[in-house]
Length: 370
Ligand code: ATP
Image (tube, rainbow, N blue to C red; front, side):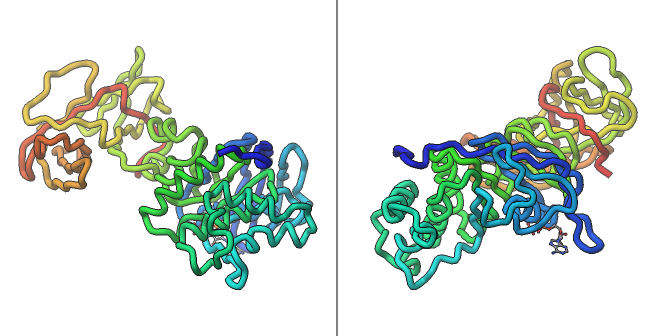
């Protein structure tokens, strides 16, 4: 669908040394962040990490204690909320129940006496594929459709920056997945800068070009979703973006292109380029789907880390994959995800097994797991 009048690109957002203190509590500390124009950026983190506060600072609903906020290169730190080129879509979308959908979307434009408010509202509704329901009332629409109306209402006045605060939080899982893809498509069509706040790692990774993982008021790591997932830098990021098998140990060799770690007697190898620390005590890890399960001891090789024998202590089937919990004496319990390719479980509960993974898939973290 042509984006028409919405084709203008959004603006970039820059947060410089932002601090936000509430009485007795620092919610954001020294936050520096640049979001390029036209990107879909997700701020991801657990409840209370400061996501909403960051969004409210950008929207002008909170004042920073320190630091500057620039939108499209213009310093808006002291600009009132309604004068910033920003709109927000919240989880509770609060459409006016007594107005039709088209009236809801054109309301803000009409109030500001903008020419062709109705035409622009129809265009926004076409973009979210709801123009055929323009004359309906909000209560005659499904939750997902109402959320799309809220989105149309937020983009109709072409903000340079759209802020989304858990906008899909009230939707059921299936609709949520569908809306994630739709939102991404709409963002690509309108070319606006989207700053999306969520605690759902799958949602952030599905939609965003860049994800920033936030913890206790600071950004721990930022990058394309696959990079964050494949190469987490901290224990927090490794655990927040899916599951990880983590091992603590001491580096016993760091010559060459890999480091060797002694983890409770097991020798595990990580490429030097994928390890944040190269000496002393370290935490290393591997994702569960990168680990293979074996019924017999695999052949030793420099390219694979092998642990075992151990025992399967739990098997749980989940459709496309099966999760195995494997306890290796001295080392701990590992999680293994295996694709179900029609041959039944690789190993039953109680079975003796070995696990292995390609050395190249391991990662070494900045901090310790304990
Ligand atoms: P959630 O996902 O639960 O919305 P969040 O990451 O968006 O969480 P924020 O709402 O930004 O978190 O809150 C960050 C921290 O700042 C929290 O510990 C919160 O209690 C605190 N906080 C937020 N607003 C205020 C306020 N007005 N006064 C005092 N503390 C506040």
